[in-house]
Image (cartoon, rainbow, N blue to C red; front, side):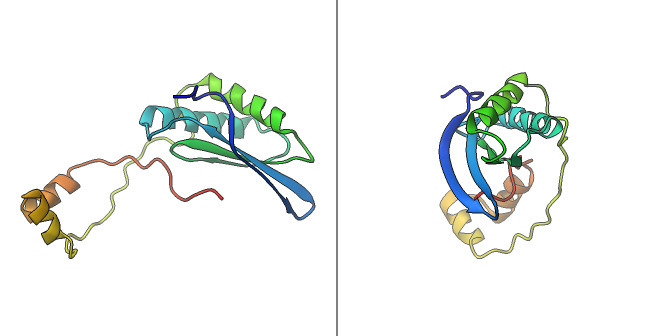
Length: 145
């Protein structure tokens, strides 16, 4: 696994958006979803937002990467990488997004319940119990361009 605190330019692109040149980079934090690395990535994002770099226009965390968009007429790719690396190395717990439990109402009346029951050998009440007894961790909501 690559060092999760090294900036890798995995998806470098440029495009003109109204009088500014927008560039973007991705900072990988993990190769598979990992709650500990996700927490460190969110802590890095919180630190970046508290210590903004002029020219950075977007900072979007996901479960594997941090997406950073910046105006190349204001700052350089290297300056953004150095800024992001310095915040990524600091570590610490994520205080910007404390964990919270969100209960999502679910109706177990789907057409696939019978198929799942047949394939697993579990009864429908057992399937419902297994699914509803878990706590799930949401790493991200949405997407980046």
